[in-house]
Length: 418
Ligand code: PGA
Ligand code: ZN
Image (tube, rainbow, N blue to C red):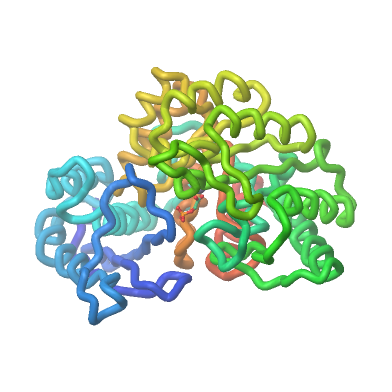
């Protein structure tokens, strides 16, 4: 059994030019593997702690050199000599070394990068594709290709635009990975044509989607529908829409209202649920992410009761890939789907635990990237291995986004021996 010989970590840059972590595991048989972790512009309140140096002289305090040192000084000695195939034991040690509820001692970024690099080294050592190794290690059945959810307008904190919502998504009908991705790209390009024709800007935001200033949120939806038709597809029949409202940042605690500056409107949670309902009647929207703020539990239950049979009511900031929060959601009947981001919790084992809990209670699972990504495509193998329903990895542009979709096509070819 190959054993861990050494562990290296480095400070690298993410797709936004801010520091993040890369780790490399070297095995005693000479093999080595590396992984890196993403960062975010909109970290939810219930995510595990992301460790940053806080030294304002470097990267405005966002450096990760302290994490690099912790990996060398604290983590390496504790896992050195372990079999690389013992992923759960490795993760257990990472969790124990940190010892806090929210990874505030080592940082979820610090523990996750080691967890992921070990899994990749384990796959290599057992001469398996990463998705096959993960599927076996965590006892999932046959790998499956998730449906990609493409984010073609970027708003909120993800772009310099007046769009209030974080993401406007398109969701293709189930087909081969290459077919679904081609469809997404066709519509992405058609949307560029629509925007140009309307005199709008076609520059893109952090996740590769367009980021123009528009007149209203509904205009973004109308433009996507026009682009879909322009590209030769039939909205509501071979393609659907989704929105990530990212509403936690639009919620004003003091007045308990949701404020939408672009639409020059504000809503109570009840009014907002009514507004969503009216959209779903009018447009082929099947996916609503973070439609309410991260602690508005009672209203999440109302939202789910009223709209859950029509659309996917998706919790991202609400659950933060945290099994305890998901358990509360299950009890309270809040949401029927959830976003999984390994960096919200900090180890592979805890991520998988949350996915399994979601599966058991019939929540649909969306494995997701972050706004500050690297070229690591680990989440794609994770989505395939865990039989996730959807994969959300941004738009059809920017290297750190398309590397994920390219990996999905590659895996599809491997599974179906094309
Ligand atoms: P984040 O956004 O990485 O900025 O949290 C991604 C998302 O909310 O889906
Ligand atoms: Zn989200």
